[in-house]
Image (tube, rainbow, N blue to C red; front, side, top):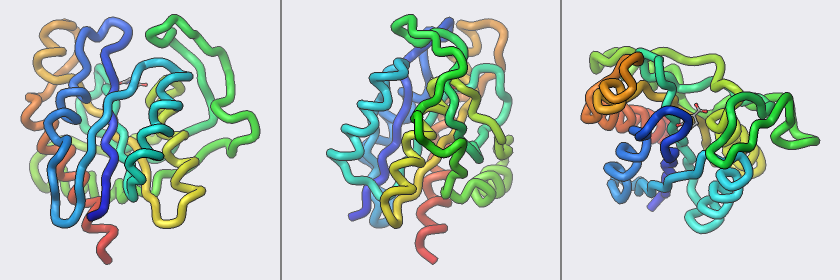
Length: 204
Ligand code: PCA
């Protein structure tokens, strides 16, 4: 049994709910072929989230790490190509507001994902979902967690890691008032297609 660690984030800034939590809770415990999905929710806190991710990785020993984040305002589902060694931007949920900081002092400037993001986008489009590769995960928590996941993948042969940004759910879009949304059912289905493509890419 191969394990997939699927992470989501708690609500943050003016988003009163985070649909990544619902997706992760929904897919937690699912099995696809010989792969077991284990879901975990991370804090929107620069320090804590990185430590939580490391603890979950230690406990679960996943071969695949897929992290999800909300990108409020995006219309499409967007697998991310690259994580950069930068922390900058809005305050996290505990008020920490980094300015031009490094995630890891001696770390590489950036890491490219080794998830099959092109296949994910092709599959999503074939299934009728708007999707494209994103070339920036920003400099906030999502980029931070993607970077940490890729550092681990770099250090552990055979491990694949990456990040998918998702649009708001209808529920959040209605609550927020100024961002587009998808039905949560479609968000869950789309993430599942991405997981299937990752499994398929690893089977060749
Ligand atoms: N999205 C934020 C952080 C948590 C989340 O779900 C981001 O894009 O950085």
